[in-house]
Length: 484
Ligand code: NAD
Image 1 (spheres, rainbow, N blue to C red):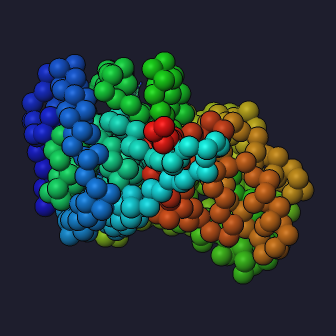
Image 2 (cartoon, rainbow, N blue to C red):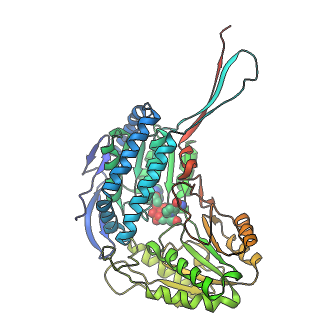
Image 3 (cartoon, helix red, strand yellow):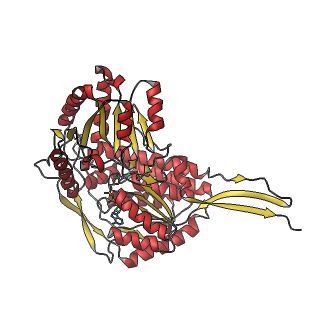
């Protein structure tokens, strides 16, 4: 199976040349160039926004049931094509093929859920304040054409979240996937088109990110901006959207803490905590917004936690995602490797203990060792900024109050986790932890049926769940009086 030739979808057709030039797409497992990506210039960006306006006029008129039928068909096509899509995803992003396949299938599931929710976009009736009013209703209508920007770490899931909710609500979309991983998005867009989404209702562009965002967000046709990405870029796009009073959703970075409670530090429960933590930490080489980063462990149990955790990290088999024996693939681009090294060096200089890893692997591809540190000073960059890679840090605590305060100390609040069998402690942690998603005794906070979103600087709004769709609608109050 080969990587496909790349094209952008603009104004109803696929274009393999564009005025913004081109850039290479690289396989992170061996650093080879696998394709050339056309980049949209000003001309194509304008055309994409205008096309989205025409697409919106068509798509919004379809009944909710028709939209549902088309989107369910798109989900079915994604399932039928899952192996091909997953193969392309692994080639451009690096994760093990089994993880890529799971990502594509879960994307189809979340599309199904959003399609269903599109049929339940209920309004309400309001009793009139005065006599002579026949009816008063509050309805939800699609917000309009959406400019959507996505990161490269989940090349199927992130674009699907946006396309699913926007299209189910009746909006059209111009989607800009990350330039590192455009092939997966291209295959998703094809599935939507084959299922019957009007070609103008779905545009896909890549380009110079800052030019694409500035052009699309300022374009009068675009009514909503949605980004999944870093806090820095989220703030930038949020400011641009605010300047034009456009709706904004930001699914941004996190810095997830894990509080391991005293009652879990016996050997059998600790084994459970460590096995689940290793799987969650090194999934997708730690390039997950909800990835656990800071492990808070009672001081007297530090060694009991750290030793098996380190052994587990050392035992992970690294390799190309297409090799079925691989448990952890490469990082997606070379900049991530350089950044990992800076995180480690800075923490060690500040006095942290490096327990394992900490270096680029001496082979072709962007491989960085699974890395575990302990006792990092609170001022270390690692303790302040999301590493977004295979780095974990284990920190001791004395009291639960102290652990909760440390967990909440950063300006981020995406996901947080805790392990305890004590009902009262679980309740206290779920109440007091400042995060959009709290996982007690497991890491599965991302599910099609539940809203996914961050508190504080980790984001604005949610995706998935029944709430995901609402962010692609505006409210309208309608009051009808009798003619005298
Ligand atoms: P990024 O912010 O660099 O890029 C995100 C998107 O914005 C991409 O499409 C990118 O091309 C574009 N972009 C980059 N620079 C831009 C600029 N100057 N102007 C306009 N657009 C620009 O993020 P990334 O490195 O691709 O992804 C990693 C980040 O995404 C991490 O912080 C991670 O936590 C976050 N993330 C969040 C979620 C979530 O649901 N909360 C999910 C996945 C990833």
